[in-house]
Amino acid sequence: MRKMSPEDGAPKIRVRDLDFYYGEVRALSRVSIDILPNEITALIGPSGCGKSTFLRCLNRMNDVIPGARLEGTILLDEADLYAPGVDVADLRRRVGMVFQKPNPFPQSIFDNVAFGPRVLGMASGRLELQQRVAESLRRAALWDVVRGDLEAEALELSLGEQQRLCIARVLAVEPDVILMDEPCSALDPIATLHIEDLMQQLKQDYTIVIVTHNMQQAARVSDRTGLFWLGELVEFGETENVFTRPGNPQTEAYITGRHG
Image (tube, rainbow, N blue to C red; front, top):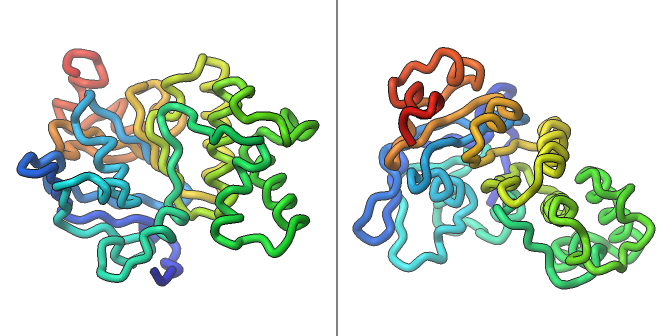
C-alpha cells in the first residue's frame, strides 16, 4: 500500500458509511468518523455495542472471521484499506494493536521486541537490531526496568510491564497508528496510570485509538470520544464536550450511569 502524506489537519483515518456484518448479523451500521493525527481517540459504550469490531476493522483483523464482510470506506492517509492488492501484512505493521490481556511471546524480552524487525528485515545487523530494541523499550518507558537483563523471560515481568513490552513490540516496527483494545482492564491502578502516562507521550509521534469501558480513563486521556450504541456511532466530538455537554440523550444517560 502506498503511504501518502496528508495535508496538515487532514484526518489520519477517514471512515465513511461503514457497515459490518458477521454473516447475516449487522454489527456496525453507517459509521462515519474522522480520526485525527497525533490525538488519542477513545471509543466507549456498553458491551456488545461494536467498539472492538470497529477497532479491528482499522487493521483488517476481522478478515480472518468466516462470513465477515464490510461495506463502506476506510482510508488511511487517503489510501483505501480494503482496495484490491492492499498488502495486509504491511497494513498491520502500520496500524499496530495492543490487546486487552498482555500477550508477550514465551521468549526473552529482547526477542519479543526484535521479532517484528527480524521478520520484516528492518535491521541490517545485530548492532542496528540492538539499537532498535533499546529505542523501542525507551519509548515504552520500560528500558530503565529491563536494561540490566534483556535475556530475561518476558513472562517473568509484572502484568503492567508485560503490557508495556507489548507496546514496545508494536513500536519496534515503526507504526503510524496504535490501536488499544481495553489495554488496562487486566492491570492494577498504578500500572494503569503508567500506561495512561505513556499514551500521552506516544501521541506526540503516533495516532492512538483506544477502546475502553472505563469512562474516567476516556475523560483523562483522550482528545476526542465516540459513543457506540447497538452498532451505531451515536455521538462523537471533543472529549470535554462529550462528557460535559453531550448532544445526544443516549450519551448523557450512559455517562451518568442511567443506561448501559
